[in-house]
Amino acid sequence: MNRIIVPLLFGVIGTAILLSLGTWQMQRLEWKRGILNEIETRIDGAPEPLPTMIDPTEQKYQPVSLFGVYGDGEVHVLVSVKRRGAGYRVIAPFITDTGRTVLVDRGFVDLEDKDAIRRLGDTEILGNLHWPDDRNSSTPENDTAKNIWFARDVGALAEKLGTEPLLVIARQETPADQGIMPLPVSTEGIPNDHLQYAITWFSLAAVWTLMTAVYIARTMRAQKGPEL
Image (spheres, rainbow, N blue to C red):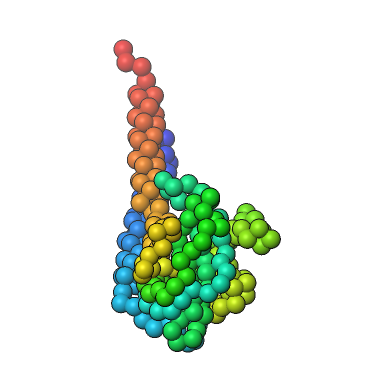
């Protein structure tokens, strides 16, 4: 009997730890779902005026409505879109009817349309403020000579196009430019892998329990000795 006490305790404690980790991930899953719901509610809310004081933490995803015209120039950010492949986000300066100039991410164009002529007349824009976190340690430096960027660096974009450091991601442009597909802000790119993590921990707990049971059963049979 003494030979099974230690593996039994080891099995019970190990299973309890794995189950607690799985439970914690389920709690994290509910927390993350709540955060995503808050973001989605924020994104789809009623449009607000452009802020005069910039606070990226408080104003991220703030819905806005703009009236005005596009200014000269644009920047092309290389991206890849599902079912479309590689192309560019078109970032352009937008002069509002109140005299402010901000950045607008108009959306996606195919590679061959990088230098196509865009519509620049009077425009109404519905969109969301955003401070994207596109750049990481593996992101190449922007090729400004060829006007090919690899990240939406708001400060650098504002300096390049002569605007305030405010980026609006367009959800709808009226009248629409048929050559541009809007890529509005969404929660699609925000990872939520807690369910997979929970399943992994619960599966390990089941395996741990099974292995403990098999070991104890074999030990007990060995203690009984061979049947006559």
